[in-house]
Length: 470
Image 1 (tube, helix red, strand yellow):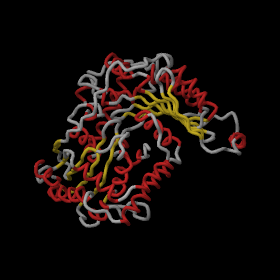
Image 2 (cartoon, one colour):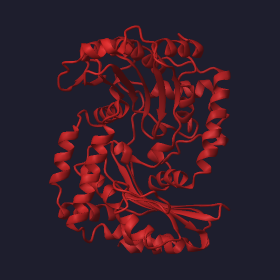
Image 3 (cartoon, rainbow, N blue to C red):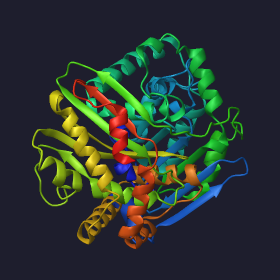
Image 4 (cartoon, rainbow, N blue to C red):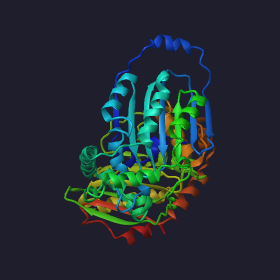
C-alpha cells in the first residue's frame, strides 16, 4: 500500500506546503436526496486499466456523495538538473495561477461554483494535482486538473509571486531542523543527484528559473506512460473517457529517460548557531516494488519515536523502541524519531534526534545502538504491538478520500497494481520475527548516511560511526 505508509512515509513529505483553492459547496441537490440515492450502497469496487495511449486510470467506487481525483506525474526534483533545480517547488506555487485557456481568477471562480478544492503537491519523484468536489462535478474537476497539468501558463508576474512563496517555504524549512535534516539525508544518501537533488528552490537559482526554463522542464516531464489518474467515488468508464479526452494530446512516451536511483551513502554536516544539534543516521530502504516493503514498514512501526513532551495515552507510540529506550532514559534528548521513504526504485530508512550541542556525540551513540539493535532481537510482545499499530494506521488513514487517492495513485504509477488494505494486513500478520531481523540486517549492510545540523563540536567522524554497523 502507499501504505498510508503515506502517514509513515517520510518526515520531509509532510513538510511541503500545499497550494490550494477552496470554497464552501454550492449544492444544487440537497445532500439528503443524494444520500437516499445511495442508501442501498454496494461494496466498494476497484478498477485499474491502462489506456491504449499508455495512461493508467485507477478508481475506487465507494458510492459516496463526494469525489476526490488526482493526476499523478512521475516528475519531481529527481528529474531536475543544475539549471532547472527547484522547478518542481516553483511549479507547486504556479499550479493554479493560470493556464493557456483560463486565468487564475477564472479557476478560483470555478472552484467556488463547484464547491471544490484544488491542491498541488511536489515531491522528489512526483508532482500531484488533486482536488475534491461533489460527485456530479467530478468530471469537470478532472478537466480542470488535467488542464492545469498539461497546459500551464508561466507568466513573469505569476513567476514573481511563486518565487516569493518559494522563498517563504525555504525560510520555514531552515527554521525546522528535523525537516532540514530529512532533506540533507537525501542529498548525502543519493550523492546530490537524482533523488539527492533538493526539493526546495535555492535562492541562487531563482534567476535561472525563467518561464522558458520551467516550460522546457515541465514539457519534457509530461508523457502518458509516466502518468496516472486516480479517483474515489466516480464511474470508472466515465473517468477513462474524460481522462483520455483531457490528456490524450500528450506524448505517449517520455522524451527524457529517467536515470536509475543510486544510493551511495555519505556524510553531510551543516553548522548553525541554533544551540541544539539534530543528527540523522540512515541506510537504503525499500522501493515500492520491493518484496520487503511491508517488513520495512513494520520496522518503522517498531522503532516509532516522538518528542520529549507528549500527552501520552494509548496509541501514541510510547511503547515503541525510540520512546522506551531513548526518550524515557535520556531526558536531555528533545526528540527521537524514525523516518522511512519509498521511491519507485529505491528508498531510505533511518532515525534522527535532537539534543543540546555538547551532547550530540552521546545522541549519535544512542541512535546507533537502536539501529543496530533492530537486527539482534525482537520480542513477541513488541512485534505484535508493532503489527497492530501499523494495521491501525493503514485502516484509520484509509477513512479519508484524499489518502485513498494518494494511496492508489502512487501504487499504480510505481508498480501498475494496488495492494488493498485487507491484503496488506494479511501480509503484516504473516511476517515473523526472523524475517524482520533478516530484512534489518540486510538494510544495515548498505552504506551509512550520516547527517548533522547545528553545533558540530562533539560530532564524531563518519568512519567512527560507520564502524558501529560493520
